[in-house]
Image 1: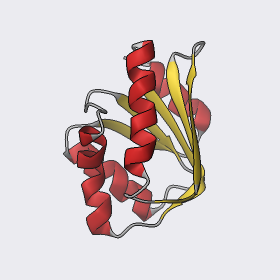
Image 2: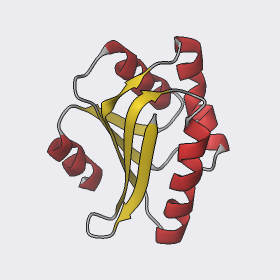
Image 3: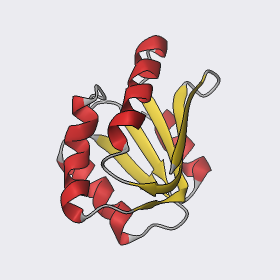
Image 4: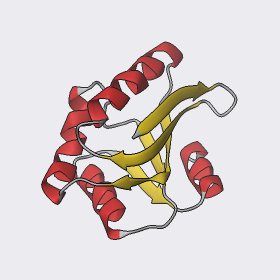
Length: 121
């Protein structure tokens, strides 16, 4: 599993790219990098590219992900677009869990639609 995190000044969003297996144990490492970019750039949008990733956690661990993100310093009001190759049940569950915990998250299978949603009010 690998990930990359960078700030896109033109789009004013944090771009996260995840490749390989994604699970709860990786989230705090990724969130720590995102937290610094949020703070350094006063950014409130995250675009996560999961098109080359698989969510490999159990439903129980997926359920813990919102708390892990929050404990890592990513507040619930940060607007997050998650882009996947194909919308499947495991990522739909992840989206639902985050939404039910008060996060602003939406799942997409199209990068342009995700960008448009992030930039909408």
